[in-house]
Length: 170
Image (cartoon, rainbow, N blue to C red; front, side, top):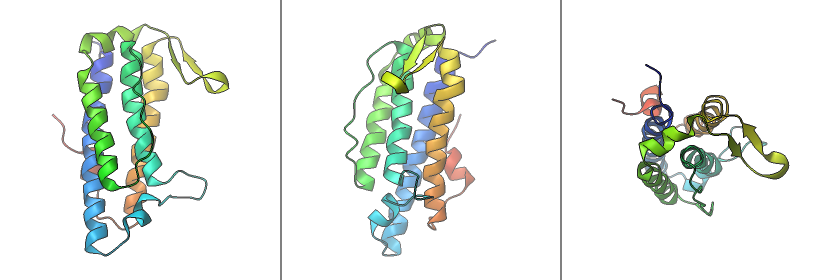
């Protein structure tokens, strides 16, 4: 039996976004416990030319909602990218989870053979079908930004491990 686009994306996004939310909770608690200014973690980056934690989380959420929307052939919800606190990042994740859960499985599966375009202008990426979009672009980018978020926090002393990254699965 082949895997559907829905099975390859929405449950994966749900699992990993929930684990990211839990990791952010631990980061906020760590900052409070050790009297670390939250911005020290929220604006932390692994290297000067990389995005800070806040932007990494925003982009991870963007890939989850954008991939789901593009596969389903519905407009991608627009978020303002104005989060500046752990609470606001949690709200963004919650909003993203609400959106991906609102899209019907059949709509997402219909994107399997549909040509997908990500971005506009010179930055546009064109994929012949949903499968190539998901496997070669969307999921790798989603995991990159979630992993980078995790790495920023771990590098800054937040006591998290692989189980935190993987989260709860069925």
